[in-house]
Length: 123
Length: 136
Image (cartoon, each protein chain N blue to C red):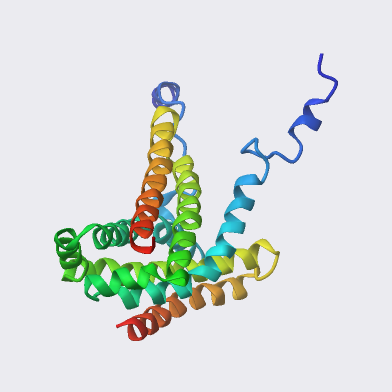
């Protein structure tokens, strides 16, 4: 027998049934990205168009490498969760599940690929 | 007779009611357009990220791979994707700042919300131009 009333169990969890965890995670990652992105855009934009040895040397340095790794991990988590929100708005049932799994997987594949490239250049 | 037909029709199709926000007669507003652009730019950025990560992987794995990826990334197609991505990232950046401001309970009156919308649009174009000037 459950002693909590239905109201007490539902309170604070909203339509998502998980409370504000998703929204808060987006808030935290957005602030992180706000600090990371201007510097990363400068690093990436400056490297684009350079010969390969210059590109490898650039991303082999600590600051560009760490910045790129953070942008990849935080950015791809932010993308996976944002894309999930969009999919949940427009798709239902099995389509929704497959699209969410695809978006989350794509984000991890991109993050892993980028980290591998960084490791190759920086280590 | 007409009433009976109408009643029958209504019974056959009980779910045909106007849907909110009723797209046929919906008048787009600055606030709604700038909101949907936040979602579009955020999700579309995945294409720029894919091109950027492919280019990084190619740079890490050898001259042959880099030649192909760098050719694509610096072609007119690459310029289009990266210029579009630069605008998208700055728009999403400013709109995200606006979101944080809204979340804190500020700027929700219509005149302020519309000013913030214009700030996102104009600011993103200006920052895109600045970014291209700085990194070219």
